[in-house]
Image (cartoon, rainbow over all chains, first blue to last red; front, side, top):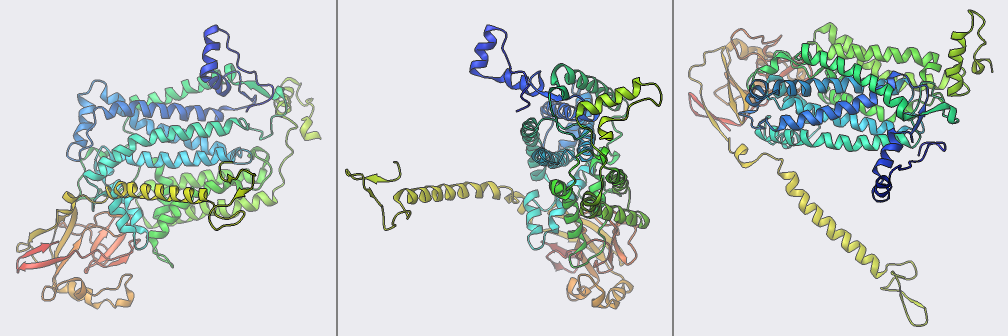
Length: 434
Length: 193
């Protein structure tokens, strides 16, 4: 949709008109990221991460297609083919490192994007479907990331496949049959490797499709903004191009610097050294850990060490899946009428506690289980669920939010007034005064 | 009107035995066509689902013979069957006594050592070497490996501990280590599978 004052697309050349009459593709682009898409004027750099995520997906698809040209999905040769890519294929090391670290980059960007959404209430009406499609993308990313990690057929890859498919054996009665069906054997082997490769190649295109839906659903209500106040008139918005193409362009440049630093100076930092040992079905690494982006969920899985009613293993798997599925219901869990946490003094503290809690879970998930760490992990896992199931509903019910600005423009101009006025003489914010 | 037939005078003729709003010939065609398509979809889905089950060559790795003559009391070896590790352990009398001393009521997955071994061969404990939690391979077969608090097997990944009968005693694993199908084809050779 975008707003009434959005400038309609007008082809300037004869050929442009001819094209627009037959396939209005330039019109679509103009309306999505051109002058035809008015965007709130107060977006901060946290709004940069959607574009960065799109860029990360593009990097993964391009490097992945190239790697697939050199990789063998053959259990006896997969490990060697990866080493061959590193040593013999022209520029192969660069493409592989870009792909492997690109996954880390993608998840890092997505986590900031998700926490941006949590902070600014991006899951609230009218953007519920944008959020839920985002959770779908995240789940697809997890599946894709896991299957991609298995492909090099190193020790961690192999045992990761063993453990993750082991989740399914927790299902009562039919679990073990499902696991054998998923693997095509009794342990990860050729059948599993082939199908993981096939799906790892397919799923990014499914992700790209859901990304289109995610953006499409976003463009109906338009982008949110740091105040959480709705756009009221033309003064509140700027055309996407050139204002946000320029701002995003700068963000992309900075992000690429960070990415290049990791890629060229720390290419193995996020990997695990055990994955440079070829898969051995008869020996487990001393400590099986997933990639860092799964650590918080792995910690929740590991937190269930004793049975009550159900076996500990089933509890762990159920808790791990529900910790993600919870996000689907956020719109209904958080009933606060205020979107932006900036105006929610009580919730703001719990938000940052949640951030710390997830970091603690991540640390626990990535380290070996000692008695003390298991207890810390159990407390952190309990707090994670308490945040969403107890704290958030209660806070959204009893909290008294701060006064909202009357409009996006008022919130922006108020800041300028404060800065330009002599010390102590600034008029108080029109919104706060009213 | 696509759904109703008309006589020359414009009065609709109702098909079948339904009255006004009842079942029409068109409804029958709709249901029949959808059912036919549904049966077709299921028929196509079945091979697409079953192709993921273990293939004949995977299933054909049916049995292995293991020579156990070299395993001294207290020792264990690791071999493989169906690409999965198998632990073969020659229990010492002390370990057998320890296993038999545990009351069944204390066990998460109650089974006696006798149920987990063959008659006359109670010292030969043969199990899958796959932790029933998430499929790691527990320690305890190799010389000097950590056998855990109960002297059996220990999975360091998530802390599952098994006793000398390979029964789960502590940690997140829900079941005892699985005893595969096997038989003694001679006093020194075990046929697994």
